[in-house]
Length: 220
Image 1 (spheres, rainbow, N blue to C red):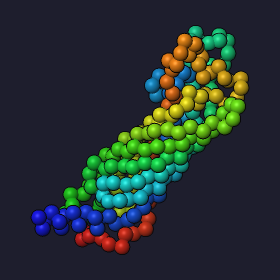
Image 2 (image 1 turned 135 degrees about the vertical axis):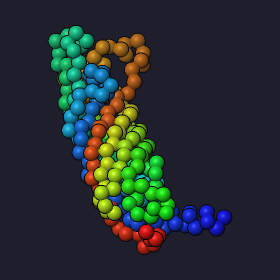
Image 3 (image 1 turned 120 degrees about the vertical axis):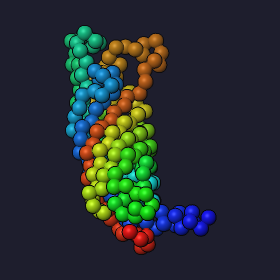
Image 4 (image 1 turned 60 degrees about the vertical axis):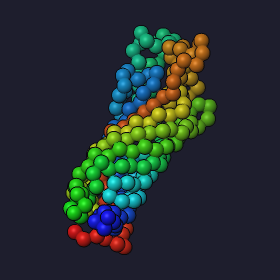
């Protein structure tokens, strides 16, 4: 019991820094009526993030990102025939969620079985904002993230991640009145609400720096 108590106390005190500030770049994709496949067409993506490190496994995350989304369909699958079969738009998104590291994540405190790398997963909610028709497009979303982190030093880390966001709109393609038909190019909604919402996601390579050293630290 004493050993367990010391181990638990050590885990709580061993979190050396309280925050991580990160920058991620990569490619974004759109999944909807104008996406040729599950991963869609890749376009640039960039984001800044802030993690509040609760312990060696858990953290709360906030992210602000800008994504380019593109879509295209073959002419023979387009309705009405002869109209533009592609779109390209920018989208800002804000996300709040949590992350879980599969291993205790640190380059120190080996007595706690820490590792300098770990797979991780996360869940959260978001809000996307972009040009729409006839008004501004604002839509909530749910997201999941799967990735891996690696400590270059006690303060600098690298990450590689995949995030997929499920929105609550079927109008990610629409940026002007002339593109209204793109929300349902195959006329699937003529007999009822058969269509689902649009999604998008992104791959990201990130770098982070740890900030605000914790007042208590365990032994190395």
